[in-house]
Image (cartoon, rainbow, N blue to C red; front, side, top):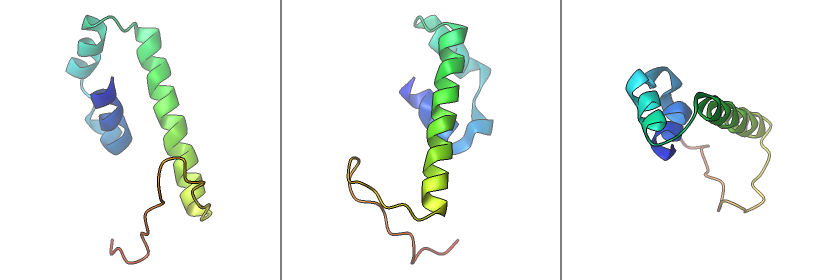
Length: 72
């Protein structure tokens, strides 16, 4: 599930049927997989909103990266 989570977080369009089947093969149900995707998406949403509004980290996950000098 952690590898699947990373794929969904970084490049959701790259998830594959094989990844989903791999989760099924180790015991995850389709409902659990779907719920995982919903949770991953909610966290991505919250993080993007926080970033957009410049909400500073409360330190739970370590210091917030400084993206101000990054070129896109």
